[in-house]
Length: 232
Image 1 (spheres, rainbow, N blue to C red):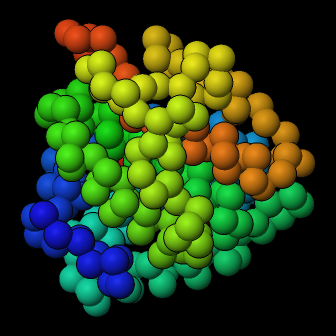
Image 2 (image 1 turned 60 degrees about the vertical axis):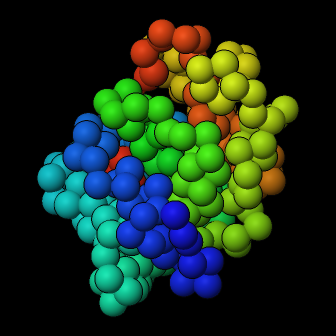
């Protein structure tokens, strides 16, 4: 496997391209949206600017152009879809939120990564332990292409959880008391209610904690798991 950090684009053998080649990931669109709008600022932006509730297929198509253009497209296609999404997001601003806020970019991209991981492992199989850190690193492009500083994306799986990864059928999940989606109901918990006035650093830290790779006991089926919810 190989990865070009300068171009932010993965090779034909990369985990990102291989995982995104699985059609089953499309089944996680609604799940990802629900996670995204669990953030109050994202939810407000969606309410004020998006018409995805009346044009869901058009909105899904726009999101898929960005996701698959970035992971599977040519250099020209990738640059074009990213420029379009950046231009759209520049117009999404309101009281207490800005779509290109790095905190929100991190939140949305983290929900996508979380969704892809969960749905891939539900429908295809567990991601190899050696490949998972590469997949995490490659997935950063979905936020950094829109303006997230690279250093704000978790560099390793150890940075994705409060105490680092442990193997027991999967990476160690965060505490049930945290704001990750509840594994039994799929509902976001504590973090979904974080105030829009919370500091960007605290929300970003919460995001990194909450969207780590889920753990499961041997024999337990993983949860299910993309789509962004901003306007288009």
